[in-house]
Length: 375
Image 1 (cartoon, rainbow, N blue to C red):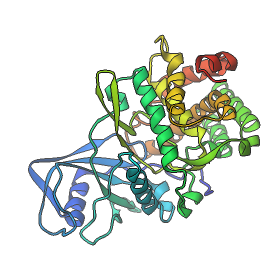
Image 2 (cartoon, rainbow, N blue to C red):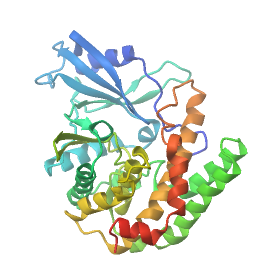
Image 3 (cartoon, helix red, strand yellow):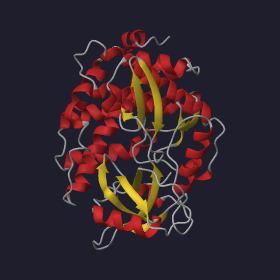
């Protein structure tokens, strides 16, 4: 597992739309049509542009029929440092897509490649990062379609389907890859948290809340991690990485996005991230707040068995993932602030995350287990 220094960036820099437009024309033979434009999309670590109403200039023999929309993705520095990771993501997407889970396809460049390093800034030193063009999938993000028991259940079934689809997926690059934000990196985060305390980014009370939860996770979970079910995880089932269409109470998954954080780990961690991000996105005073986990777990178990020991540790792992997310957001803002970037999205978890962490830390595990129907 690669190590990170305190100053290693995990976020791609801001990229001017004119740079994206030049890459589209030079590398993909796409130029703006009558109403063509580029729309900046939400991205925590990558930079994504929605490519709207472009047409071929005839220089890309691999292009085929031009679609109305594409997504131009500029990968983050973490993906750039792991040799073969972009190719591994493309192989994973193809494998999962063949098994019925919709995900984006890579568009072939003029030179026949699926991606290439491109200079995207002219700073000193310049940023040269992996760039690729992806097909655009229909549907709305979870955060825009609206939450309900049916949505949580559908998300649970998607996670189970992903685990079933990747049960035999094997890739040497992914075996070596662990993203910065993952539950295997608790030691790195303990160091970052103490640094944030020393720099007065957090106070002693917040530091203790984070460290106590992480330490409990290391003692109760990581010390016996071999007892848990392992496999290939997506690692970032959140409100922006799943696309859905909704017709009344019927919910259909139309897209699973972003395989940059995927790696081999404990399978339950995918349910953990989904439960956490759904709880963060809902009002804590909503009567359904504590039932979110129950609907997600029920959806998962409708497709695949969840081992009892895994289920019994979900709340502990949810608390710990939230600790890492809070510290990670502050770290990202700390590094990005020096670049003069907008920190609003990376600090989204801070708005209610500390209060949610306090509630989860004080919750009775047996009572939560009953609410989530964990035996």
